[in-house]
Image: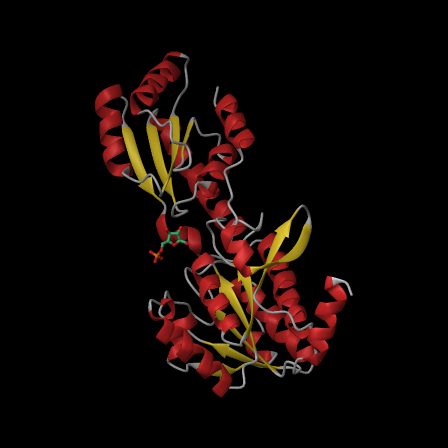
Length: 336
Ligand code: F6P
């Protein structure tokens, strides 16, 4: 018997899913509401009850659990943030917290759980799956730092928000013929920096993944660009490198060019989701419910090579992702 047939047989023998819980965990991301809405409405359409868990795993441990109807998610697809609120939860990293969370799911009849968040949230979902709660993870983070997927809910909106803000900084930077160093979020990953660097035509992109950063060479390049007639010099600095304020001071001292620092901060996480985030998050939400109905558990939904796919959470957490070198090289050439 083939693997698929075996899985189908096992799924048939399992109890059918009657109640699905949904929570958002970690940093919020635009599009999370579209995913919640899709989970709720797909489940209800299949005759399954839905419970919303407020404030992520933290709320689960505090039993902040509400019933969700189709109307509860009306007028939410266009909203940023998450209607369920979110939190980072230390207790869910402990065996005691995980056991308690699984017991609470059972108490509320939650036999399927959709967790929308990043890698840390998936580690919790994996433990719940081990403890008998069917779980599906959806990648929700503006950082794009989840290895099994080329798309994460919120990245598209965040990168567009950052791009628009940087365009504005650029206007004033050109008028004053200044150097501007702009810090974008991304935790330890440089995807936001790389995309903004290309989209905003930055002269320099600094990312934690590139180990060859040399500030002396940067100063020389700024002076060289000035000689070539450039009216400004835009540096996109990833949060993972940081030190933006001090770097601006050092650059100004070394080049004599007026330099200003801007840290974009949390504005990158807010705002109405883009069309892409609304559509992809909706598809992922619906797929999560379908996977649960097929009897699947311990899976994470990803997007690869033009397709929505699901991966074993253990395997997904073990995968590695790297910055596309080709894009980085192109960015350098285009900065000419
Ligand atoms: O993971 C999303 C993110 O916005 C990161 O880019 C950033 O490092 C972090 O969250 C900020 O977290 P907080 O909102 O807790 O300050």
